[in-house]
Image (cartoon, rainbow, N blue to C red; front, top):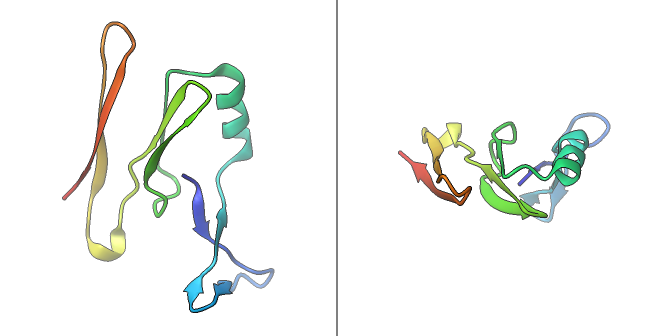
Length: 93
């Protein structure tokens, strides 16, 4: 969920063949906090190009992402019921 464009030391994008190379660019401290405290849900949005859902331990992690280049507003509808069950749907429009 934290994949972004990889840049070299001169801040030029790195190519992987004819495509931009990607690498993890998210916060290591945030991941460590999720691993340590295991919250029910973790919502993310800083890495726009890395939309997705994953789990870290028992934590559901959602990055709604967005696509400014395409003019799409992306989001996530999330419901947590009284028993702590999480359901979600990724949206775009």
